Image (tube, rainbow, N blue to C red; front, side, top):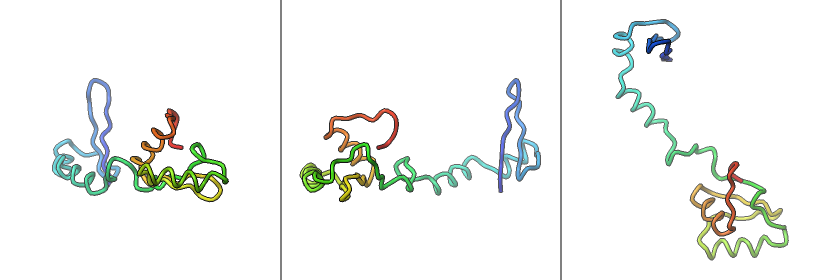
Length: 114
């Protein structure tokens, strides 16, 4: 079932169920707020992030290939789960490790992840 509310001028609303316009009462009988909350809770990603985002692979925090072993050892000492691949790109498992790695590197990426 696909639902939609179209907001018009002066606070007017039009309700649609599967592309067909219905009254507000019919809409309320079919789509209850608690049902919507249940659906959103069922499909919500944990922690507010999309599961497909992690692990994150990037080059912005990469190192030279000759520095990979040293950087992996440093991350392990500091309890950071990010690991460097042999080519120097970093693989960050989750947002918490990303934040820790940024703090360790003393960088702040204001544009995007990696």
